[in-house]
Length: 464
Image (tube, rainbow, N blue to C red; front, side):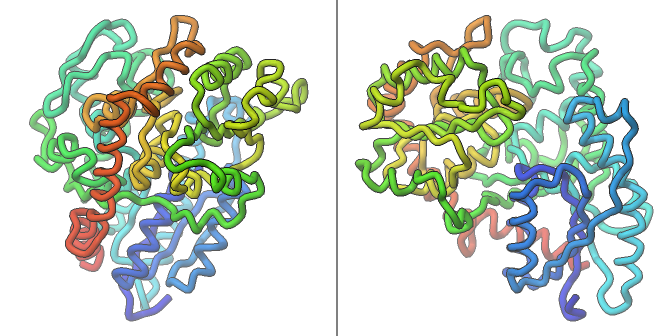
């Protein structure tokens, strides 16, 4: 590494939803502030997409390198755990290896590290970095509103005897709008659930950080950001906050489009297409796929639907067989169903895209915001219901689907939401709001912008 450059170590979580913001953040530090970056990575759940992204970053010409930790051994019982619990377990077991890596990087007399940055799922390593007296920061890859709720989780746990899942109506949260109990993040819902105490632990461990960087920008979540910038939650001091987003990949990073999506979009009118995608790890039931298809058909809207096959789908390898009979033929003049990977960022950046049916993963939300595309919010898990609530009620650039007691969004509901977003007066207002936020996102990252200033302030601390 270049001895003239300040040097930071970064330990991200696994999964592209976490890695992409970390990689984009590293590029900003290296290219804009002259940093050398050493990524410490866990050898777990490595996907082809991650490998390709890592190789691209390593060969970018920036001062970025990677250290891979030894593989963690898991016993047979641990391997059966829920994926989220398993991720926590693996990352916790890497703590000793992270300490060894940090000691090695500290002892590099030519260019020792001056700061350590990690993920919210890796906060157990803050104890190690503190022991080694390394200034330590967390890059939170989600929204400011969700971060606030995680930090407030300690207070809620102490004050509430009931589980959120057993409550009806809104819950008051100081500094934020009242939030329906059902819209709090899944891990906070059930006091007896397997994830509740994991997130309660995070709520405590986050307080050990010297600062928290957030993948958001002030104009997008002004209320939540200001609540965090106040410096305390319910009387407890919290780390300094730095909103540095949006940290998203560029459309140009979607190097290859084997799906034909972009060529199809080239033939469609401006802002006329509803893009439907629920991310790479979410799969709808057969009943829900049928309802969604019929709703899209009934809406009369143009659509581009990314419908990947669920894993281990040996019994039904042709995902198009899950669609209603004749659906693709009836909609062939205005719809395209893609059963392979598709370049989401490039699709959202395309001028023909006018709306986005999304699960409300935060990366997808920021990609949509950055390209001025309104959202039909269809949350599925984790913190996505919280994000959907704020998109509709605070950010005001989305409409939300209503799910029945059976967990199904009906074809009538899909049709109504699609028409409202693409044709209705309320949809028009939301499209105007989306265009405003697109310009705000650009301004935040531009010279003198709020996120650019926050990044510069954090970078100055990394050098000390």
